Length: 66
Image 1 (spheres, rainbow, N blue to C red):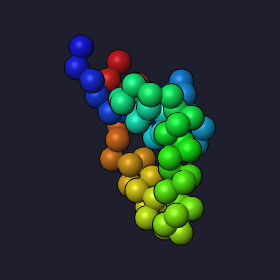
Image 2 (tube, one colour):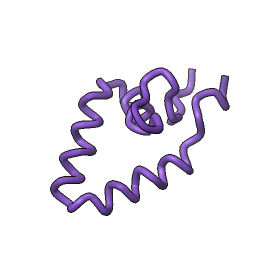
Image 3 (cartoon, rainbow, N blue to C red):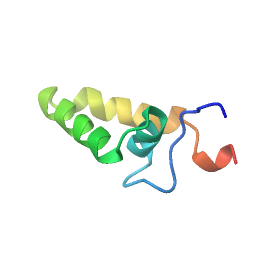
């Protein structure tokens, strides 16, 4: 089965972006969320927030493919 990057429904806290990245890279979603927070703190949050918002609109929802 081909791996696709999607926003997950089952492992989401806000919009499912971090859960989708975690499923795609086959790692724990908590690690992805911690990475997002650390990058946000180190870069004064503006770039990571913009990346998250853009990812929300660009990455399709999980149910669109099932």
